[in-house]
Image (cartoon, rainbow, N blue to C red; front, side, top):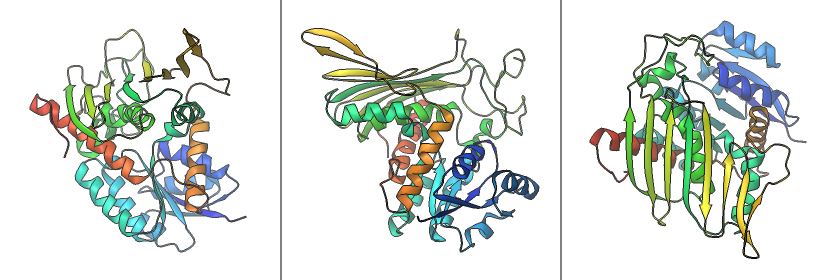
Length: 353
Protein backbone atom coordinates (compact mmCIF):
# COMPACT_ATOMS: atom_id res chain seq x y z
CA UNK A 1 0.00 0.00 0.00
CA UNK A 2 1.29 3.46 -0.91
CA UNK A 3 1.67 5.87 2.00
CA UNK A 4 0.83 9.54 1.56
CA UNK A 5 3.16 11.70 3.65
CA UNK A 6 1.60 14.90 4.96
CA UNK A 7 2.45 18.20 6.59
CA UNK A 8 0.01 20.75 8.02
CA UNK A 9 0.60 24.50 7.91
CA UNK A 10 -1.21 26.27 10.74
CA UNK A 11 -2.00 24.69 14.10
CA UNK A 12 -5.21 26.48 15.07
CA UNK A 13 -8.72 25.14 15.58
CA UNK A 14 -9.51 24.06 12.01
CA UNK A 15 -6.13 22.33 11.76
CA UNK A 16 -7.21 20.01 14.57
CA UNK A 17 -9.91 18.54 12.30
CA UNK A 18 -7.37 17.95 9.51
CA UNK A 19 -4.82 16.46 11.88
CA UNK A 20 -7.33 14.14 13.52
CA UNK A 21 -8.51 12.86 10.13
CA UNK A 22 -4.94 12.38 8.91
CA UNK A 23 -3.85 10.56 12.06
CA UNK A 24 -6.78 8.15 11.75
CA UNK A 25 -6.25 7.45 8.03
CA UNK A 26 -4.32 4.22 7.32
CA UNK A 27 -3.02 5.61 4.01
CA UNK A 28 -1.34 8.60 5.68
CA UNK A 29 1.90 9.22 7.54
CA UNK A 30 1.74 12.56 9.35
CA UNK A 31 5.23 14.05 9.12
CA UNK A 32 5.20 17.67 10.29
CA UNK A 33 3.30 20.69 11.59
CA UNK A 34 4.27 24.32 10.98
CA UNK A 35 2.98 27.31 12.91
CA UNK A 36 4.29 30.81 13.59
CA UNK A 37 4.17 29.79 17.27
CA UNK A 38 6.84 27.09 17.35
CA UNK A 39 5.87 25.85 20.80
CA UNK A 40 2.28 25.34 19.65
CA UNK A 41 3.55 23.56 16.52
CA UNK A 42 5.58 21.21 18.72
CA UNK A 43 2.68 20.51 21.06
CA UNK A 44 0.24 19.85 18.21
CA UNK A 45 2.74 17.67 16.34
CA UNK A 46 3.33 15.57 19.43
CA UNK A 47 -0.41 15.32 20.10
CA UNK A 48 -1.07 13.86 16.65
CA UNK A 49 2.07 11.78 16.20
CA UNK A 50 3.99 14.00 13.78
CA UNK A 51 7.76 13.86 14.19
CA UNK A 52 8.72 17.38 13.08
CA UNK A 53 7.67 20.93 13.94
CA UNK A 54 8.57 24.14 12.14
CA UNK A 55 8.07 27.84 12.86
CA UNK A 56 8.61 28.69 9.18
CA UNK A 57 6.29 26.90 6.70
CA UNK A 58 8.97 27.31 4.01
CA UNK A 59 11.04 24.76 5.93
CA UNK A 60 8.11 22.33 5.88
CA UNK A 61 7.64 22.88 2.13
CA UNK A 62 11.34 22.21 1.57
CA UNK A 63 11.09 18.85 3.34
CA UNK A 64 11.52 16.21 0.58
CA UNK A 65 9.70 13.55 2.61
CA UNK A 66 6.38 15.45 2.47
CA UNK A 67 4.05 14.68 -0.45
CA UNK A 68 1.11 16.92 0.40
CA UNK A 69 0.04 19.69 2.75
CA UNK A 70 -3.06 21.07 4.37
CA UNK A 71 -3.13 24.86 4.62
CA UNK A 72 -5.03 25.87 7.76
CA UNK A 73 -3.82 29.44 8.21
CA UNK A 74 -5.71 32.73 8.33
CA UNK A 75 -7.55 33.68 5.12
CA UNK A 76 -5.03 36.35 4.11
CA UNK A 77 -2.35 33.70 3.47
CA UNK A 78 -4.37 30.86 1.91
CA UNK A 79 -3.48 31.71 -1.69
CA UNK A 80 0.15 32.60 -0.97
CA UNK A 81 0.90 29.36 0.88
CA UNK A 82 -1.02 27.29 -1.69
CA UNK A 83 1.09 28.82 -4.47
CA UNK A 84 4.30 28.19 -2.51
CA UNK A 85 3.27 24.60 -1.85
CA UNK A 86 2.44 23.85 -5.49
CA UNK A 87 5.71 25.40 -6.63
CA UNK A 88 7.49 23.23 -4.05
CA UNK A 89 5.95 20.15 -5.71
CA UNK A 90 3.37 19.37 -3.04
CA UNK A 91 -0.26 18.40 -3.41
CA UNK A 92 -2.46 20.89 -1.57
CA UNK A 93 -5.64 20.90 0.47
CA UNK A 94 -6.34 24.58 1.20
CA UNK A 95 -9.03 25.69 3.60
CA UNK A 96 -11.88 27.81 2.32
CA UNK A 97 -12.02 30.47 1.04
CA UNK A 98 -9.27 29.68 -1.45
CA UNK A 99 -8.40 33.40 -1.33
CA UNK A 100 -9.70 36.68 0.06
CA UNK A 101 -10.10 38.25 -3.38
CA UNK A 102 -10.73 37.16 -6.95
CA UNK A 103 -7.31 38.50 -8.01
CA UNK A 104 -5.59 36.25 -5.45
CA UNK A 105 -7.74 33.28 -6.48
CA UNK A 106 -7.02 33.73 -10.19
CA UNK A 107 -3.28 34.02 -9.52
CA UNK A 108 -3.43 30.70 -7.69
CA UNK A 109 -5.42 29.14 -10.53
CA UNK A 110 -2.74 30.15 -13.04
CA UNK A 111 -0.13 28.38 -10.91
CA UNK A 112 -2.35 25.30 -10.59
CA UNK A 113 -2.75 25.08 -14.36
CA UNK A 114 1.02 25.27 -14.85
CA UNK A 115 1.79 22.38 -12.49
CA UNK A 116 0.75 18.75 -12.25
CA UNK A 117 -0.39 18.87 -8.62
CA UNK A 118 -3.74 18.30 -6.94
CA UNK A 119 -5.14 21.45 -5.35
CA UNK A 120 -8.34 20.78 -3.42
CA UNK A 121 -10.48 23.38 -1.64
CA UNK A 122 -11.74 22.74 1.88
CA UNK A 123 -15.45 22.58 1.04
CA UNK A 124 -15.88 19.94 3.71
CA UNK A 125 -19.68 19.83 3.59
CA UNK A 126 -19.57 18.46 0.03
CA UNK A 127 -18.02 15.30 1.46
CA UNK A 128 -20.79 14.64 3.97
CA UNK A 129 -22.78 11.45 3.26
CA UNK A 130 -26.07 13.37 3.09
CA UNK A 131 -24.65 15.63 0.36
CA UNK A 132 -23.16 12.77 -1.63
CA UNK A 133 -26.41 10.79 -1.47
CA UNK A 134 -28.39 13.78 -2.72
CA UNK A 135 -25.80 14.42 -5.44
CA UNK A 136 -26.27 10.85 -6.67
CA UNK A 137 -30.04 11.43 -6.97
CA UNK A 138 -29.44 14.66 -8.89
CA UNK A 139 -26.77 13.17 -11.17
CA UNK A 140 -29.13 10.34 -12.09
CA UNK A 141 -31.77 12.89 -13.11
CA UNK A 142 -34.25 12.03 -10.36
CA UNK A 143 -34.88 15.70 -9.57
CA UNK A 144 -34.68 16.89 -13.18
CA UNK A 145 -32.99 20.17 -14.02
CA UNK A 146 -32.29 22.21 -10.87
CA UNK A 147 -33.54 25.76 -11.45
CA UNK A 148 -33.81 27.22 -7.94
CA UNK A 149 -31.93 26.91 -4.66
CA UNK A 150 -31.94 28.47 -1.20
CA UNK A 151 -28.91 28.74 1.09
CA UNK A 152 -29.16 30.13 4.59
CA UNK A 153 -26.93 30.11 7.67
CA UNK A 154 -28.06 32.42 10.47
CA UNK A 155 -26.64 32.90 13.93
CA UNK A 156 -28.11 35.05 16.68
CA UNK A 157 -24.84 35.95 18.42
CA UNK A 158 -22.00 34.14 16.67
CA UNK A 159 -19.25 36.60 15.76
CA UNK A 160 -16.05 34.70 16.70
CA UNK A 161 -14.08 37.95 16.93
CA UNK A 162 -10.31 37.99 16.55
CA UNK A 163 -9.01 37.59 13.01
CA UNK A 164 -12.48 36.49 11.84
CA UNK A 165 -13.69 40.02 12.60
CA UNK A 166 -10.71 41.77 10.98
CA UNK A 167 -11.53 42.39 7.32
CA UNK A 168 -7.89 42.89 6.34
CA UNK A 169 -7.11 39.36 7.48
CA UNK A 170 -10.37 37.49 6.87
CA UNK A 171 -11.53 39.31 3.74
CA UNK A 172 -15.08 39.54 5.10
CA UNK A 173 -17.46 38.39 7.80
CA UNK A 174 -20.12 35.68 7.85
CA UNK A 175 -20.28 35.65 4.04
CA UNK A 176 -16.69 34.33 3.79
CA UNK A 177 -16.83 32.27 6.97
CA UNK A 178 -20.18 30.44 7.15
CA UNK A 179 -22.16 31.71 4.16
CA UNK A 180 -19.56 30.24 1.81
CA UNK A 181 -20.43 26.72 2.99
CA UNK A 182 -24.14 26.89 2.19
CA UNK A 183 -23.52 28.85 -1.03
CA UNK A 184 -21.06 26.21 -2.17
CA UNK A 185 -23.40 23.33 -1.33
CA UNK A 186 -26.15 24.76 -3.50
CA UNK A 187 -23.80 25.70 -6.35
CA UNK A 188 -22.25 22.22 -6.29
CA UNK A 189 -25.63 20.46 -6.27
CA UNK A 190 -26.85 22.73 -9.09
CA UNK A 191 -24.02 21.47 -11.28
CA UNK A 192 -21.60 24.40 -10.84
CA UNK A 193 -23.31 26.78 -13.31
CA UNK A 194 -21.66 29.98 -14.54
CA UNK A 195 -22.78 33.08 -12.66
CA UNK A 196 -24.02 36.01 -14.77
CA UNK A 197 -25.40 38.52 -12.26
CA UNK A 198 -25.54 39.18 -8.52
CA UNK A 199 -27.66 41.51 -6.42
CA UNK A 200 -26.35 41.67 -2.87
CA UNK A 201 -26.71 43.54 0.41
CA UNK A 202 -24.53 43.69 3.50
CA UNK A 203 -25.32 45.19 6.91
CA UNK A 204 -23.21 46.10 9.93
CA UNK A 205 -25.96 47.21 12.29
CA UNK A 206 -25.24 44.95 15.30
CA UNK A 207 -21.45 44.72 15.48
CA UNK A 208 -19.70 42.00 17.45
CA UNK A 209 -22.38 41.85 20.18
CA UNK A 210 -19.68 41.26 22.73
CA UNK A 211 -22.15 42.47 25.35
CA UNK A 212 -24.00 39.14 25.06
CA UNK A 213 -22.42 36.96 27.74
CA UNK A 214 -25.27 34.56 28.52
CA UNK A 215 -25.10 32.65 25.24
CA UNK A 216 -22.06 30.43 24.50
CA UNK A 217 -20.25 30.96 21.22
CA UNK A 218 -17.00 29.96 19.58
CA UNK A 219 -14.35 32.64 20.13
CA UNK A 220 -11.10 33.00 18.24
CA UNK A 221 -7.89 32.72 20.25
CA UNK A 222 -7.29 36.45 19.72
CA UNK A 223 -10.90 37.42 20.57
CA UNK A 224 -11.44 41.10 21.32
CA UNK A 225 -15.06 42.25 21.78
CA UNK A 226 -14.15 45.79 20.71
CA UNK A 227 -12.58 44.85 17.38
CA UNK A 228 -14.87 44.30 14.41
CA UNK A 229 -14.65 45.55 10.81
CA UNK A 230 -16.82 42.96 9.02
CA UNK A 231 -20.49 42.77 8.14
CA UNK A 232 -22.92 41.01 10.47
CA UNK A 233 -25.43 40.09 7.71
CA UNK A 234 -25.27 39.49 3.98
CA UNK A 235 -27.88 38.40 1.46
CA UNK A 236 -28.00 38.00 -2.30
CA UNK A 237 -29.92 36.86 -5.35
CA UNK A 238 -27.57 35.07 -7.75
CA UNK A 239 -28.48 34.33 -11.37
CA UNK A 240 -26.77 31.79 -13.60
CA UNK A 241 -26.21 31.37 -17.33
CA UNK A 242 -28.65 28.44 -17.52
CA UNK A 243 -31.48 30.56 -16.07
CA UNK A 244 -31.29 29.09 -12.57
CA UNK A 245 -31.20 31.31 -9.49
CA UNK A 246 -30.03 31.05 -5.91
CA UNK A 247 -31.20 32.94 -2.82
CA UNK A 248 -28.58 33.34 -0.08
CA UNK A 249 -28.49 34.85 3.39
CA UNK A 250 -26.03 34.49 6.24
CA UNK A 251 -25.35 36.25 9.51
CA UNK A 252 -23.12 36.32 12.57
CA UNK A 253 -25.70 38.36 14.49
CA UNK A 254 -29.42 38.58 13.86
CA UNK A 255 -32.40 39.11 16.13
CA UNK A 256 -33.78 35.69 15.29
CA UNK A 257 -35.41 33.21 17.66
CA UNK A 258 -32.86 30.48 16.92
CA UNK A 259 -29.69 29.69 15.01
CA UNK A 260 -30.49 27.96 11.73
CA UNK A 261 -28.98 26.38 8.66
CA UNK A 262 -31.14 25.64 5.62
CA UNK A 263 -29.99 24.31 2.25
CA UNK A 264 -32.51 23.32 -0.43
CA UNK A 265 -32.59 22.75 -4.19
CA UNK A 266 -35.61 22.51 -6.49
CA UNK A 267 -35.86 20.82 -9.87
CA UNK A 268 -38.45 20.06 -12.52
CA UNK A 269 -39.06 16.52 -11.26
CA UNK A 270 -38.37 16.93 -7.55
CA UNK A 271 -36.78 18.98 -4.82
CA UNK A 272 -34.73 18.34 -1.71
CA UNK A 273 -33.74 19.80 1.62
CA UNK A 274 -30.14 18.94 2.46
CA UNK A 275 -29.94 20.79 5.77
CA UNK A 276 -31.05 20.67 8.51
CA UNK A 277 -31.89 17.11 7.40
CA UNK A 278 -31.94 15.34 4.04
CA UNK A 279 -35.45 14.94 2.66
CA UNK A 280 -36.54 14.61 -0.96
CA UNK A 281 -39.88 15.62 -2.46
CA UNK A 282 -41.20 14.25 -5.74
CA UNK A 283 -44.31 12.88 -7.47
CA UNK A 284 -45.35 9.26 -7.93
CA UNK A 285 -48.55 8.05 -9.54
CA UNK A 286 -50.11 11.53 -9.44
CA UNK A 287 -49.32 11.92 -5.74
CA UNK A 288 -46.82 14.11 -3.91
CA UNK A 289 -44.30 11.91 -2.07
CA UNK A 290 -41.63 12.69 0.49
CA UNK A 291 -38.57 10.44 0.60
CA UNK A 292 -36.19 10.14 3.55
CA UNK A 293 -33.07 8.18 2.55
CA UNK A 294 -32.05 5.70 5.24
CA UNK A 295 -28.41 6.63 5.84
CA UNK A 296 -26.27 6.84 8.96
CA UNK A 297 -26.93 10.56 9.32
CA UNK A 298 -29.08 12.88 7.25
CA UNK A 299 -27.21 15.98 8.45
CA UNK A 300 -23.60 17.16 8.42
CA UNK A 301 -21.30 15.61 11.02
CA UNK A 302 -17.92 17.26 11.57
CA UNK A 303 -15.77 14.18 12.11
CA UNK A 304 -17.30 12.16 9.28
CA UNK A 305 -17.11 15.12 6.90
CA UNK A 306 -13.43 15.78 7.52
CA UNK A 307 -12.52 12.08 7.35
CA UNK A 308 -14.22 11.87 3.93
CA UNK A 309 -12.61 15.11 2.75
CA UNK A 310 -9.14 13.92 3.73
CA UNK A 311 -9.73 10.53 2.07
CA UNK A 312 -10.75 12.25 -1.18
CA UNK A 313 -7.62 14.42 -1.05
CA UNK A 314 -5.38 11.41 -0.40
CA UNK A 315 -7.02 9.36 -3.15
CA UNK A 316 -6.78 12.23 -5.65
CA UNK A 317 -3.14 12.87 -4.80
CA UNK A 318 -2.31 9.17 -5.23
CA UNK A 319 -4.13 9.06 -8.57
CA UNK A 320 -6.94 6.82 -7.32
CA UNK A 321 -9.80 9.30 -7.71
CA UNK A 322 -10.72 12.81 -8.83
CA UNK A 323 -11.08 15.53 -6.25
CA UNK A 324 -14.71 16.67 -5.87
CA UNK A 325 -13.55 20.18 -4.89
CA UNK A 326 -10.96 21.31 -7.47
CA UNK A 327 -9.24 24.67 -7.28
CA UNK A 328 -11.31 26.24 -10.05
CA UNK A 329 -14.46 25.65 -7.98
CA UNK A 330 -12.87 27.69 -5.22
CA UNK A 331 -12.14 30.46 -7.70
CA UNK A 332 -15.74 30.56 -8.94
CA UNK A 333 -17.12 30.73 -5.40
CA UNK A 334 -14.78 33.67 -4.65
CA UNK A 335 -16.03 35.28 -7.87
CA UNK A 336 -19.59 35.13 -6.53
CA UNK A 337 -18.62 36.32 -3.05
CA UNK A 338 -16.68 39.29 -4.37
CA UNK A 339 -19.63 40.22 -6.61
CA UNK A 340 -21.95 40.22 -3.58
CA UNK A 341 -19.72 42.72 -1.78
CA UNK A 342 -19.37 44.79 -4.97
CA UNK A 343 -23.14 44.86 -5.49
CA UNK A 344 -23.76 45.82 -1.87
CA UNK A 345 -21.31 48.70 -2.08
CA UNK A 346 -22.69 49.92 -5.42
CA UNK A 347 -26.33 49.48 -4.41
CA UNK A 348 -27.20 47.72 -7.67
CA UNK A 349 -26.98 44.41 -9.50
CA UNK A 350 -23.54 43.59 -10.96
CA UNK A 351 -22.06 41.13 -13.42
CA UNK A 352 -19.05 39.34 -11.90
CA UNK A 353 -15.64 39.88 -13.44
